[in-house]
Length: 118
Figure 1 (tube, helix red, strand yellow):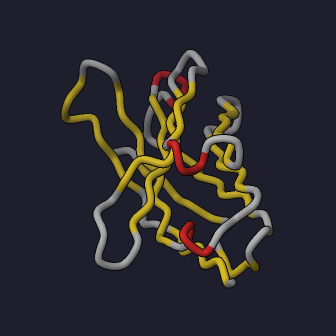
Figure 2: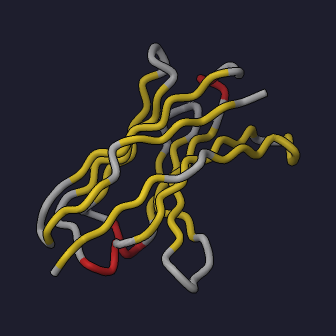
């Protein structure tokens, strides 16, 4: 059973920075595609950033140039460094693990709240 535990959320002023972490257990972490998603109240859960096992990354247009996703396979951890935060970045951020070609391999963390005040 894959377990994902997020940390690092909180309250920050607009223009500030936060770093989210997601620690994984129960799988061969280095094989996973890891992603960060977010869900604001009343909205759907959307992809923020993802990183493949090979280190390729992709970002939502709204966060390009401000957010950076990275992974440390030795620590079984994926990070989301967020800079220049805006009030519209306010959401619950979820960590996700997928495995290419395995549709049922789809695991989520419990989420961490990020609130950006104006």
